[in-house]
Length: 293
DNA sequence: CCGCGGGCCTGAGAGC
DNA sequence: TGCTCTCAGGCCCGCG
Image (tube, rainbow, N blue to C red; front, side):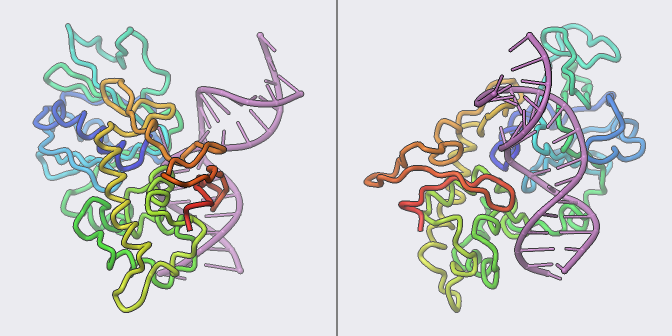
């Protein structure tokens, strides 16, 4: 469940439990997710205190009291859940509220408060790493990340510049984390619908000229943060995984205008179009051919 | 550098 | 019921 709004929802859920928390012990189920855990991962975390829980694009970053940062990515299927410690946690147990260990619980953070934070990830496309906080920006994963979609940098002028010379589709350009970092397949589709821009358009055609972005680019610069904010307010989108750390579902999937709505009527006022699914770069794109130009 | 295609994993759902 | 197939919210790598 991992685009920016879902990651932000997770961050907001974890923050009250994690910030200021002392990590007693970390348990791993196996040595790797998408990549191996760094050496001595569990040992290096034991005894540390979390000073802040931040987000960069789709990454969660827990700053620790020794100057290292725990970097976490949810991949396609990662989720966190918080288990508060009634009684004593059985040693060696990845506890589940019903006493069962989830089949894909890979990491358990045992906090001094008695709470446990469990990371579950069936497909194991997720990632955890430990890096010096002052070198985060230079790390391979972060070095090439573009701007935050909710930051001040996202202006029509900036977007227009980013699209300049890009021969790829606007859909692919918005998925490119080197430009705007944090959008994924769902929110790109939704933002394009909101801005009435066809996903098939060449990105360069939206660049405009001499710092004069096109009207479509101005609409996109509004639609992107607007969709993200609404999604965060709704607790993200839940398709098959839980978005929230307490196990409750996000609600934004009920507000989708195009994603997953193949064959359904376009909800734009006055539009009689029907939502269509196409494949771009091997991934589904949903859009309304009638009103997205 | 850019853009594309494939690969990495497991599970859910559809269709037979 | 059970099998096979397709698809899934992301990212990395290697190729031309």
